[in-house]
Amino acid sequence: MHLIKNSYFFKLFFNVLFSLDVKLMYILVQPLLYPTKTTYKNILINTFFFLSNLNIKDFIKTLILLIFFLFIDILKILYLPIIIFFYFSKYRFVQLDHSQIGASTQYLNIMVKKNLIDGYKSIILIPSTTEFSFFSEIFENLIIVNSLFLNILLLPLKHSDYISCTTKTMDHHLDANFELINFSPFSKITNKFKKLKKKKTKNLFKFKEKYVKENYNYFKKKYPHVDLKKTIILHHRERNYKRTSKLRGSLISTYKPSIRYLLSKGFVVIRLIHSRSTKLFFKNKKYIEINMEELVNKKLQFLILKKCKGFIATDSGPNSIGSLLDIPVYNTNVYGINVNAINKSGVYI
Image (cartoon, rainbow, N blue to C red; front, side, top):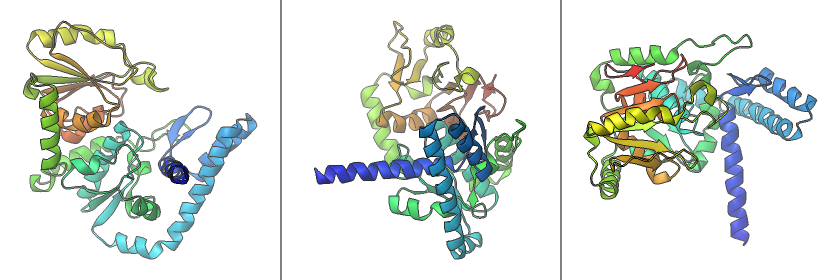
């Protein structure tokens, strides 16, 4: 019983710690919830907002964030010799948001490329307690650190502007006047990356042979009738999935004619879903739904997306895997900032 209690305590501690880690990357400023840089000013705006509205729970959370922010800044001073060492090295950290699939693959894609353009190798911190720590099982040529001890020890370095590719320099944050702080950094980096010598870029996101073999065997065992070369992957974001869905969501019923058309042409259609998704039914065994809440499928999606004929996706979640793997994407419901149809076969609307 004592061990169970300790295990629960440590799990809770790490969850809170790495949740605060992500919150240092960006903040949603009250009351309009616009995304922007995490600064003392913005944290204090939220703190006073929650206090004045007697929202004690969120007030305490924001106060803890403020203390954590200050603590990391103090540690940066103590870490100054190490920061100087890394500054003159060939390595840079990546400030990866490991809280969700879309953000994690989006930052992985653009930040690793940015570091390579600048002449640096990337160090990627993904704690083993987070659901995307399996990235280290997938990518052959990326330095991914899963160790909890190292993830905690290196936190001040990841949040140091001098030796890390940070979210505030890469993402499309807004200022208090709702103007973009960074204008289209993803497009600029993608274009610069394409101009690099192919020798430098060819195997950047290469898969490990073990990952490919294990996941391909699993897929063929479960879906023996599926030829991935004649498969279209579909990911649709529901309108009410999260608070921002009104910008990017749509009705799954509008995809039915497209699915029927693809099935009639002999294609397999694999739809990536979650447990609350509206299910579709077709009298055709070539229509398949795969639940992405299962860990085995979260890993599998990288392989099937890499091997498939094409990817139809709304501007959400797995969509950013399209640009990471440089596959043909039909990117729908794009609201003007991020486009993941980045190659000659890609289309967006």
